[in-house]
Image (cartoon, rainbow, N blue to C red; front, side):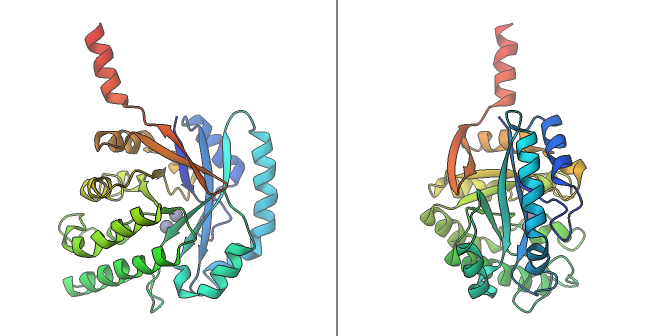
Length: 281
Ligand SMILES: [Zn+2]
Ligand SMILES: [Zn+2]
C-alpha cells in the first residue's frame, strides 16, 4: 500500500495540475490513497494565503467531484500545507478553527524578514549558516504553534544549495535539529519523508538517514510519505523508495491521516521480500 500525502494542485499558486489529473496519475503509479495539500503560507498576503482563499470554494468543488469519481479506486484526502503560521498567528488560528481537514503539513518556506528560502543568494558559508540557523529556530516555533500533523521537508533549504555547499547534509546543524526531533516526538507530530530529493541533486529522501535514525531513537514512530509534486510527472514518484528506506531504518508502519487522525499501515519490505522469494526458489 502506497500513500502520497504531499501533492499540490492548480489551487497552489505554484502548482499546475487539476485534481482529476493528479488522481489519474496517482492511480497509474500504484498509489492506494493520496492527500491534496495545497499551500497556505502565512507571510505576505499576496503570494501567501490570499491565493488559497480566492480559490477555496473552487478547490472544494473540484475535490468533491473527483473524490466521488474515484470512490472505490483511490482514496483522496482533503489536506493543506500550512507555512509558518507563527508569523501571523491570529490569521492562522482563525483559519484553522473555521475549517476541517483530513491532514495538514507544517512547513517553513519564508524566513521572518520575508525572504523566500528558494530565492536567497547563498553566496557565502556565513549566509548558509545564518539561513539554516534561522530556519531551524523558526521550525521550533512552528512546532510550538502546532495545528498540523506532519513536519514537512525538514532539510528544505538544501534543495537550492547545489554547488553552494559541499555535501547535501544538515549535519553541521545537528545541535539545532535535535530539539526539533525531541519536540516532534513529544507532541505526537509525524515526520515526513519527502521523496522530491530523489529527483534532485541529493538523490535521496528528505531528510537524510541520520535524521530519521535519530527520530526513531528518540521514540518517533509516526511517519508520512509525500512526493511534494507540483507537476503531474512527479505524482507518486519514489514513494516506494521512501517506504523501503523507512523499513531499512527500522520503521514498520506508515501513517495515513483522515480527519486529522493517523491510521497505521504496515510498510512492505520490497527488496527483502524479493530476496526471500529468490532463496525459496
Ligand atoms: Zn513545502
Ligand atoms: Zn509542498
